[in-house]
Image (cartoon, rainbow, N blue to C red; front, side, top):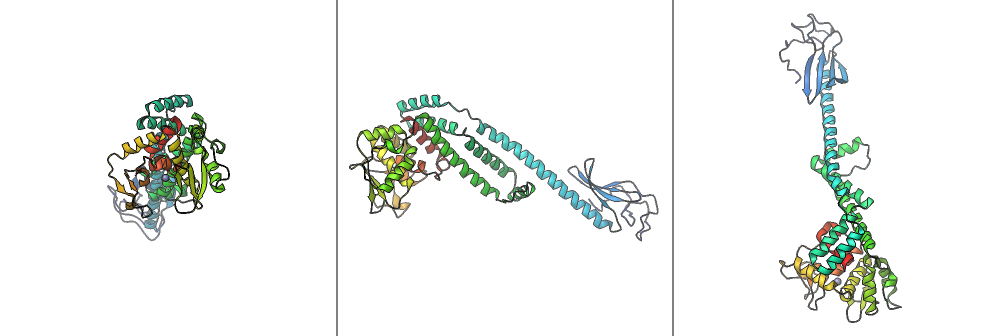
Length: 398
Ligand SMILES: [Zn+2]
């Protein structure tokens, strides 16, 4: 600490040198008595300010044995000492920040490592798992194979990179404040000075989108995905709707499209009054002119639930198991856009509409999951990873 002389005689000369009696002062660089040897003026965490005696005294900022900077002790030695101490303290905090960053990066790398190399089953193994799930036909069985699909998706290079980036940011957020994070961005010369929470949130969204895309690609390797030509559409339907069927076809297995097509044709009509819907009796998707691809994927989900054997049963079993403890509620409690007669068991579904109960046994489960799969910006992996895994399991198994 400056000004504390420990065992030294407190006398200083005009340059701050220690002497055994009062110095000559007056700006002289000579002291009347022999100057006492060097003294540590300040010391913390391996960084110190050493005062050297002798003819041309100075304050030396040292890091262990290495001199970082030297400040000549002039007649304004108090200011020189303050400047040296300030420099030493700044150097210490730089060292501490670097050390902390290195430590956190090591932790982050360790945290990211298991995610980068999960025990991922091969596609052939996924096919076997899917065949087994199809026989057992329980929510757990579909979920298990869906989790295996996700493990495989995490191996996708872009998904793996996005997940590693996310793990690194999460580890950094645990060990450093936002101010420290911003300073470290200055150190590496990044112009983009994003807040740490914002960077983490963005990395989460990016990782989830890569996972969503990569998971659907894995499903496509297990079994072929549908194309527009697999749908048995009635010609001359609402053309904008027909275009959107082609756009979202790849969110469904080809088998679903061809199986459903065998029991009849599908009509795409323009809907003029309110919400788009699927009409079971007329096998018709009434599609609203302002609706988008995600709505088409949603209505196709209803179409498949009604035309792919086992799908409605799987959806009902999953919904009823998830929402077993959730009381029946009016959907009006969530939005005035719903009708008086619409009821749901909302559970903790990403959207309370998923738990909607129909008297005729239809569900919104397949439709809502299909709508999300057909929407590249939907965050299924983030909002409900358990249900995401279940739906992936259904897609590869049923
Ligand atoms: Zn619906």
